[in-house]
Every structure is written in structure tokens, then in C-alpha cells.
Length: 68
Image (cartoon, rainbow, N blue to C red; front, side, top):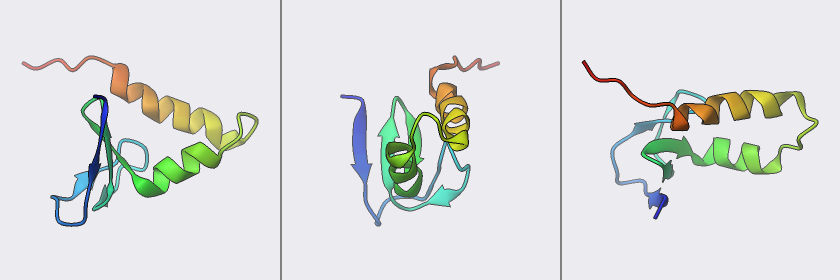
């Protein structure tokens, strides 16, 4: 399963899109997406200037992490 809901009683997380700590959101592929950004992404049309920003931020989910 790729997503799970995080409630108010969970630890604060940093959103992969807005990069702010939020209490509520979902985890997608191990990354946190706050509910505000989730709503904004769903409501944004592909011709909106913000669309490319959201795509760029969400691409971070698929880049590999290198640990040294």
C-alpha cells in the first residue's frame, strides 16, 4: 500500500511540497504530503503556473537517497 493517513496525535512531519511541518497529511512512498498541499494539487489544472512547481516537488519522491 502506498499511502496512509496521519492524524493529529502523530508526530509532526515536513511536507515534501511546502517543506513545512504539519500535523495532518498522508505518506506516499515514504514521503509526507500535508493535507493543504494535497488539496491544492488535486484542484490545480495542468495549465496553472503552479502545476510545474507541484510536479517538481513531487519528483523528489522518486529520486534515490544516497546514504554515506
